[in-house]
Image (tube, rainbow, N blue to C red; front, side):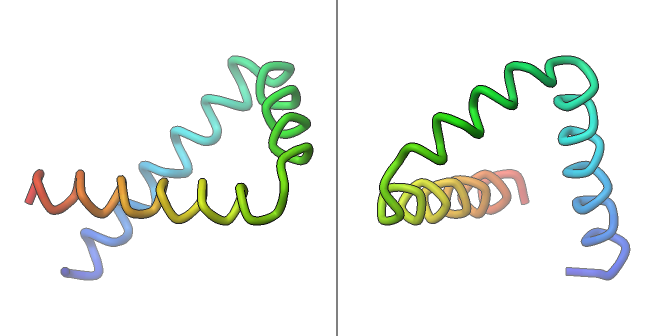
Length: 62
């Protein structure tokens, strides 16, 4: 992958994150509170599944 592609992907992630916080900050705060209530292993599994989903989407798209 080229450096430009990585920068575009990183910029896209920042845009999505920024819009989420700008449009629904209270919803994100409730989501973070709910995640904090999960056991550590469940949060790790959720993170792993999220990363694998992103990798699968990129693989299909490219």
